[in-house]
Image 1 (cartoon, rainbow, N blue to C red):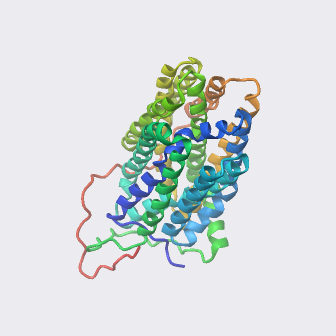
Image 2: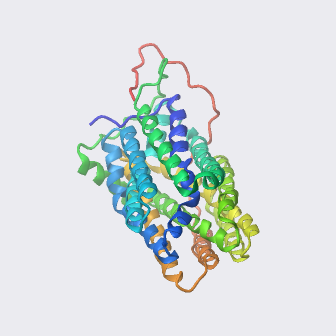
Length: 423
């Protein structure tokens, strides 16, 4: 079975472009408001979020095995197309059924991306002998993601004022459609001479067939202690981030005008961009430091939500700075721990765990929404964050074997006779 394609030095730029296009979505800042404007209650909104999460949960690991079995750039293109179709349904046919169908498509797209993008990036860097740069490049991808969401929040305000919620929807449809050729571009050979990879140990034989790939990935995630520990930490940190889906409702509850809600959401998204950069520099952080940061972040989240004022978003922003930093650290640990032939499958197991955590959060908050305000719902999310901080503080702090960051230098020129790597 041929290895999935991996990006050379020029392809990393396309990873940034793909990430930006799939996150630069004005609809993201207002879709909760779009749905409530068509009669969807807070409880029904939680059910829709649960539908989204269940879909991603069911598709997560099977889609990871697909990305280990077939070209990853095509898997990413399919993810963008699914997302685009869902947004089209929301914009053209706004109703509870269309919202549910759109979340199913978005959930499938999320599952197809989860594990695929990280694996494509890590394997591409490793092929160039630059695996130690993964934390830095991954932090930049995270920063591009957060900056794109912040920019989309900024753009959503004039779009809502000029064309209402449909304008944000159609612009989002166009941007996700443009992400399809960006993903397919990852499968083209980088121009110019291809640098030779540094000498590496003989790779493990690649299992033949989809089922064999799936078994290999599940076995490594379950049977290798260092991988299992990294999977659990990454799953918890990613799953707890879903509270951002309630932030537009929290902003409206705090008295923020609908058109100004996207501007207020710039605070947490700008903090996430800053946290992404910080995560690249702190990839080797130990459990004790993560515990302190998460404890402070959880307290800031609860305090910010319970103020009942727009100024409380400063505390929420502090939480998201910490969360994104910790997510980068956890993902870097995981990618360096994986040594088997099914990287995307193992990474998707972490995604599966994240969806399980997210589903538990959505269902709990959906039940609590009968008697609690949005401020209380968001504050409740700080409880598992604080529990995770306590768990990290109490467990032994193992060595995580994260390579030191490497400088951003161009790879050495190709040696004569070097075999070209094809994307």
